[in-house]
Length: 170
Image (cartoon, rainbow, N blue to C red; front, top):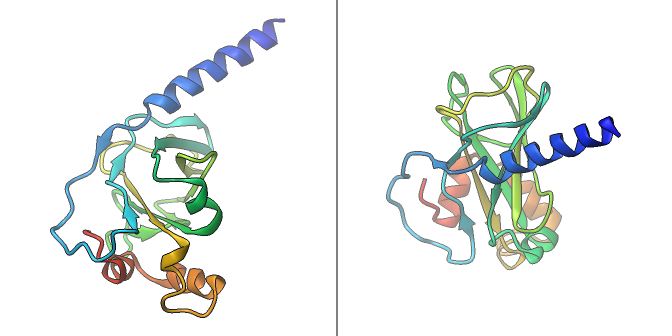
């Protein structure tokens, strides 16, 4: 009985952290051209707190733009900007290896995205920025013959190249 209560308490704390884990936004982006109304780029998010444990950290963002259609038929790209990163560009496409850890994202349910890290110690919150880009299926086949080829092409592109291609403000 005590174990069940402890598990319930841990679950309640993790849920509370998840629901309050987002809120601080990163610095505003540069002015750009809105080249594609169907492609959605999120704001930059910085975690206020990380949930999880050693080697399994995450924070979540809720967004109604992460619809079933985007998840099932479109493409979701995610990016991070991390303090102390020695990468040539200031923004890395995810998944990636940086500052001693793997950084990635997952979609636990429609309307939600979680940014993850396998760092041994809890990542910081100051200077850690994350963003996602949602590309509907209707925008994928404009330059490639198949969805697979279009996705492969996008995954090879840098953050700057994706922003340029879709008119996203960096």
